[in-house]
Amino acid sequence: MNQEASSQPILRVSELNVYYGESHILRNVDLGVRPGQMVCLIGRNGVGKTTLLKTIMGVLKPRSGHIVLQGQSIVGLPPDRRAKLGIGYVPQGREIIPRVTVKENLLLGLESGRAGKNKDIPPYIYELFPVLESMLWRMGGDLSGGQQQQLAIARALMGRPQLLVLDEPTEGIQPSIILEIEAAVRKIIETTGISVLLVEQHLHFVRQADWYYAMQKGGIVASGPTEELSKDVIQEFLAV
Ligand SMILES: Nc1ncnc2c1ncn2[C@@H]1O[C@H](COP(=O)(O)OP(=O)(O)OP(=O)(O)O)[C@@H](O)[C@H]1O
Ligand SMILES: [Mg+2]
Image (cartoon, rainbow, N blue to C red; front, side, top):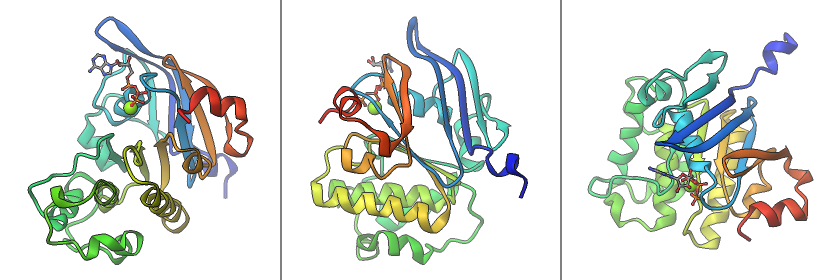
């Protein structure tokens, strides 16, 4: 295989600047995700992590900069087009629909993504998240926080994304379920080849990633393989 093509990133963000009104939130952000990689964005509260993910998804428009998905510029495209091109997004706070069943929540994932007309739930969804199979007829809002998070990730997978973007999937979730979600995300990468861009605060989960970027005041101030995450970096950027 051609070396250039094989090392082409799934996602490349460069020189991104984003404002809320007159406040300059993201400052010259550069970030990349390679095929099959799990990349974790860390940083303390309010530094701009969610703003970056929303800009990648097209919910927010940057004042300047580039966002390239598999060689194609997506910076001018609306969120639904980006989803169709293969980005699955689980927003902070999950946003599952409380008054419809788990099954309907899952099927809604088909509409936003790249999936075809097939209205079945593929078995690997239940292999990743066994709890969902037993709860298909429950209302989304009756699930626990951890179950809702699993549902939200499963719903994003239903759109058959190439890149899964997760904003703090373990926020407010009990430790044993955090480990389950972590294991499921690892398994998604190992078994499907989907790449993952994740915002996360739990060190154990962060360490599952291949690469980290650390954000401070809207800029990327450190990055590297997670094996090289030093005590200093962890203390500075994670709320541990
Ligand atoms: N809708 C908005 N309008 C104006 N300012 C906003 C808006 N949303 C966020 N901000 C500001 O932008 C900055 C970055 O917020 P953002 O939500 O991206 O941070 P974050 O790193 O995701 O934080 P957290 O860890 O708490 O989720 C913060 O100073 C926040 O107050
Ligand atoms: Mg956030």
